[in-house]
Length: 90
Image (cartoon, rainbow, N blue to C red; front, side, top):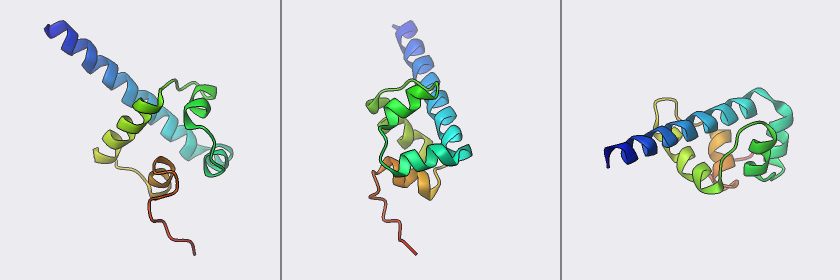
């Protein structure tokens, strides 16, 4: 039973590392940022960039990243919420 919990912890940790890698890739690439802003499928975009995750993992993982010490930038919150984060246009 403990082995199952340990495997789940390892899988969750791997998912967070994968999402962090994707988050950093988007942060570092104006091309990826434009694709995200244009409404690209984030799961497909992640896979194209070597970050394999499901929509469910994306949803739960972003929540964990937001609650972490790093938190999410306003752009990242906008991405996760599908543009519904309340970001104001200037």
